[in-house]
Amino acid sequence: MISATRRLPRADFAKYFKAGQRYQSPHFTLIINTTSSPTKAAVVVSKKVAKSAVDRNRLRRRAYGVIATHPVFLGTGVYILIYKAGALASSRLSLAAELTLLLANSGKPR
Image 1 (cartoon, rainbow, N blue to C red):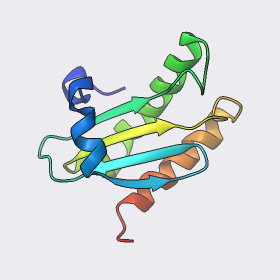
Image 2: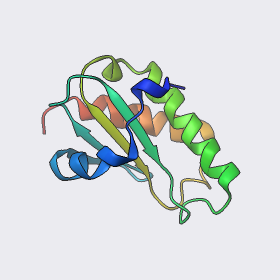
Image 3: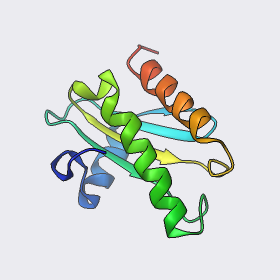
């Protein structure tokens, strides 16, 4: 989990949705904006992905855990991770591996 000071406030979402680069995987969409100097992150899990708040929070905590330990997050920028439908049916390990691969590939030029 990352500290509250490193999480992106909801009011800033619209600004970074427009300007960020998007990276896709089967269960995630990652939006990165490297123009911001303090590193911040947000994880979005909609009710389409998981109806129960317990499941949404579990997915969110797991993603924050992977993001916080990944070397990409040590740089600067804003990271917004959006879960896609069907992610709840996948295993914890497969989602963590997919997210790690997505973060690793996001640092490479297209």
